[in-house]
Image (cartoon, rainbow, N blue to C red; front, top):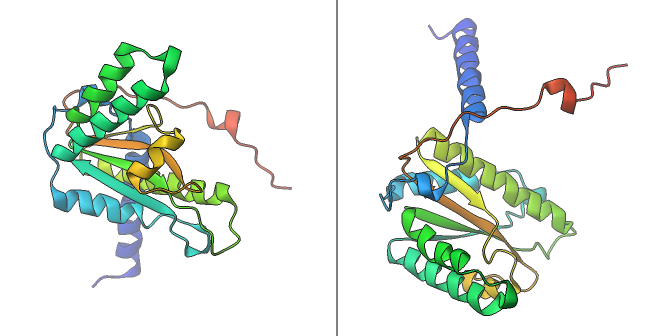
Length: 205
């Protein structure tokens, strides 16, 4: 019989597994991927479904994901490298240009992370941004749970107004970066965090 004690034990095991997942999650960069090895469409869909279950104010669901794979990765690479070249002016660096052209091809999938501004409700912009950030954390944890590598970058063309239309975003929307996903060839090293008492204040009386 499935009694309360068994239920409690199972929930404790689930909590322990969640603790482990959160605390061992690491960013895995494109250079650490098995170059171009594909992740299945079924797994990608599960990762994206999990992303859409992030908390969001007023059920606005302000995320807008554009997913690149296969030939689409070459399209993204070409777009972002050429846009960087035409907008960087005196700050142009050949190494950055080459990186923007080559890094996407190392991934299985890249998700452009768009925020569609909520205009039908009185929701502050920062709360739409926060909702998308929560969705990205769901992506991070899901990728880790599937034994894959993931990396959220806000570099390249992320904050260029000229980039928005390529990803179906309007003037009031924002591009919040790109999430790279791939199979791990070189695992990331363990990380550490500050002691809890350095970041937490308890107010109990």
